[in-house]
Length: 466
Image (cartoon, rainbow, N blue to C red; front, top):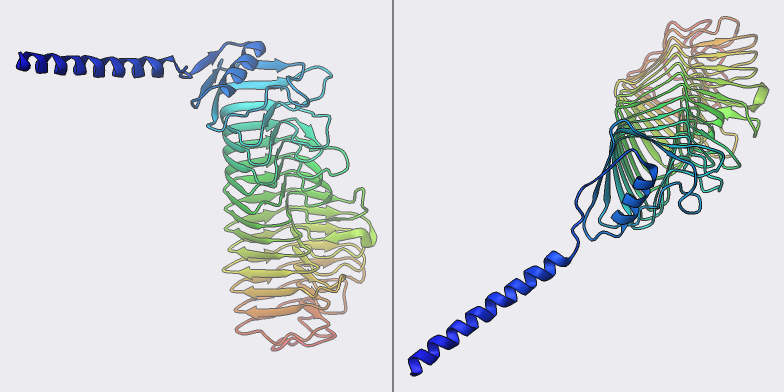
């Protein structure tokens, strides 16, 4: 009997254990698992899908109808056409080449990633956003502590105060790959970042193109992220009203590799100044490597032109590594810095970089290749090593120093060349004009400049004669 009782007890324990396992399994299956959602070509269904995804406990995926245009006519909340993304686990939105578009007269952006939320977007176009508030992010806003990841994203034809196409705010995280910002613009007082304003803790761009965007500051891009990295891609045909026709860097550490910055323009605007047709650096530490800055232009009138047809540096540091600054222009009376103008901070031109065939034109223009000046009591520092400043021009009555003009800066040349620059209407040097003696010239050449290499410069350049 004892043996039979023991056997029965074991049997009861086994049944009890199996019952508990079954109860746990039943309880787990009662928690709704968010399956992939396929949304038909209906904006109302898209709103519902995002609302449901935000309430999920998993990492939901929303698949849009291929090539559908989801037209949004009213805001879901405040300034947002679709419900803000709040799920920390992250929502994935597969566009399948669909478009989300604002229609009608109501003003709002299309997508908003709230603080703590995460959104991944693939193969989608977002267009015609226009929020009424000055927070900006014409199409997409990424709030502080929000995360946005985009692949094959097109942000087109949007308007916003900061970030005409998209704004990633302080402490956000932004990753973009194989994406495009086209025909976006800023409006209002700040008017920064026609295509993208990247202010987040981290921003990483790979093969991102900026085309025909407009802003007062930073026609294509306004950057003040703690860490900004960009590889490949381009900035073409963008415009600024004041500074930075293409890219504007204000703070943090930025590394740009293999990018083409071409045919952008900075023109005298609201602040009666213009500069940095291709790139403007006002702070932080910026490196451009294996890149091309070409065909950019600054136009204005008189002394209001800050110059720098290719690049303007007004603080912080810029390092050009194997980068070509070619065929840029500054047009206007007393124009300066056809290739590069530095008004403060540090410029390093290194490792096979070329500043060539740039032009300043207008009466009393100077610094066809590089102009250095000290208007704010911050003497700039310029180093040119294993690189060239050749074949630049200064055109116009009284124009001079087609290669380098230096007022108050410190220059070092190492294995560099300043050759074959031309100021045809000048009696002064066509090569280098400097009011601070330049003595650090190891292994460098200064030849073939017209009308002279350094003759009639206020201060000498070691080893430069004629």
